[in-house]
Image 1 (cartoon, rainbow, N blue to C red):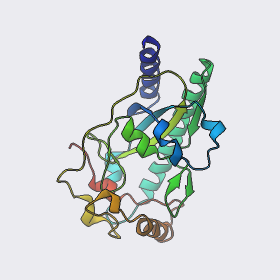
Image 2: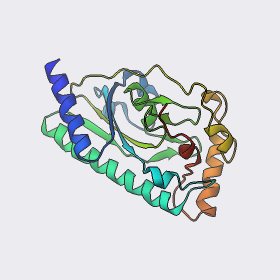
Image 3: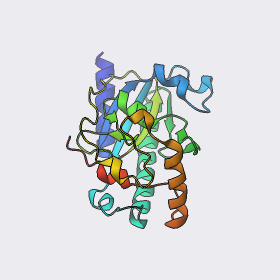
Image 4: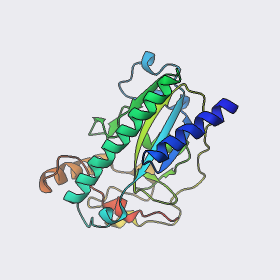
Length: 225
């Protein structure tokens, strides 16, 4: 237990020093069946998911009205780069301590139509206590709302495990009427993944941006729940 607590504290302090905003650890054994294109031998024994969140700029997000902006596109890319760099440094430290670790890129979609990456950063973040899955199909942090980006590292380093939050969107429905394609429903499980993807693809052309992003519902989900 002492090593688990010390390891947790060391990694959390590193994340904060490197520019991270949120840190949590989840037991991911029950999530491994949902991983995509990760051979069993690659994830064998890696039962801890380290979830790191970086807060988006409030002013950048508030500049989004009904479509993504060039400023948001640039900010989005820069935060992904920052998180990947945080993961690289944590990987180096964990390996130096002679433990195994697999960093998963911040934004690397394997199946765009179904919006799936190797793993679900948000589902691991939920189990790591960083927030809950909102109606907008994104992580909702009680303080920052959906205005965070996430990255994950899988490891066998002994770590304390955080508890998930017993919360949901409650009476908040701010994201539903603003969605440009009506993909957000009353129930999170009814979220229209295909409709969302088609709109992201349209924005990519219309807004002359090189990424499938929107940000409209992120602006609506400001936190302070």
